[in-house]
Length: 224
Figure (cartoon, rainbow, N blue to C red):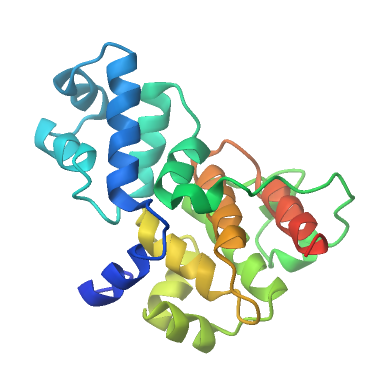
């Protein structure tokens, strides 16, 4: 299922990524690969993709790279997905710091009514399901409706609902960035968008728990 079919809409939003986007991500991947002495052919084989696919990514020709590819790249290059997301988001991401160490007391209630999959329930899930739990919590916390979010993101309601339900196995990074920005209904801020995107990507990759992501998001809100 596609998140945003408008090429004009994609191009307009990429322009807000302050010299980031697919070009910056591609350069970061290429530099990391070269620093590790790995050829395109070797890395592509490790990822299980065609060399041409990796070449397109490194040349910045993929505006909306899939999160599964990002997670696989982070493992192959021994770098966090947060690092790769920051490259994509550009200098906008640089000033953003993680939140304070305050206690999170109401995350479980905000995360929805998933079955208890773990002692922490829905806050322990990862992959597309965990990312969906976190995205929905961010949206509810920020008071953004489904209708308002899809309108600002220029996408479809069924796509947002599918992402929040964890039914999109590998969303695109640009699609996630647009959603993360669109849920900030009252005071849109690209620095806060950058933090949310990084958290969503890291939950997807299993680098942090949904609990941690929600905690950091709420801590950042308290500093605003």
